Amino acid sequence: MKQLMKHVNELFKDVPESEQKETVVQEVLQNLEEKVWDLMEQGKVEEDAINKAIIEFGDAEDLKNELGGKQLGKPTKKNNTKLNLEYSIWGSVLIISLLVFINFYYSPHVIWFVYPTFAVLWWPLTMHFRWKKVGKEE
Image 1: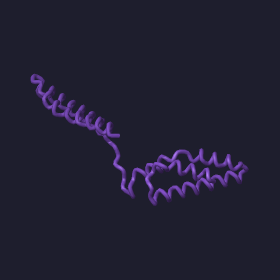
Image 2: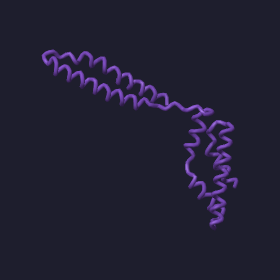
Image 3: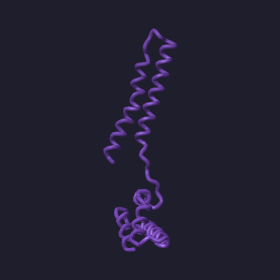
């Protein structure tokens, strides 16, 4: 079962050392060993059972993100900059559309909606630059 231990250690090598990591590693190792024993009871050779258990376990990205991304229960900050950009674009379109409607409905002889449009466009413009800045940091 050294192959399982080697595989699990390789999976979690980039996760910082902690008690939580050690607990998860032991749990994963125990689950893989149980899977190997079950497969061997079904008639698989030990080597085949180990390989099949590793393949069925798959990738441990969720576990690694949980261990490496959180520090003792603190939630990780989610990156919502793209969502904020999309929201600001749609919000600006709706506000500008409202301004155009009010302008042409109440005072069609004077075109004034252009001036507040410049003020409204600062919102998506700032969100765009924030999105670009956060993208470069990652």
